Amino acid sequence: MPGGKVVVYSGLLPVTQNETALAIVLGHEITHAVAGHGRERMSQQMLAQGIQVAGNVALGNNPKTVSIFNRVYGPTAQIGVLLPYSR
Image 1: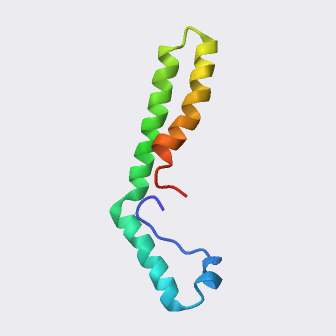
Image 2: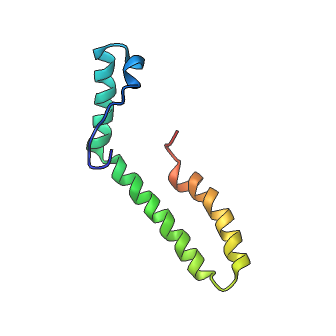
Image 3: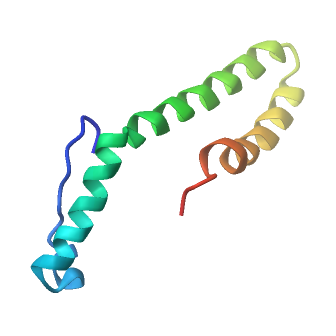
């Protein structure tokens, strides 16, 4: 969670089945929090959004060109910037 918090939803408890498995999952999630992966992801999303806004401003005189840019940029940003290590 943002701010370095780690939470456990009750739906995870039947999957882990015992305290050892739950400790492994919590350790994994704590590592993500310490490494700052949430902040890194938010920075990537802000960069992608900024590029899109800049493209819209640069092409703002022609609505058809802006529409084409947005249709191409959306999927390209997802694949190239936002999803490299995502599930």
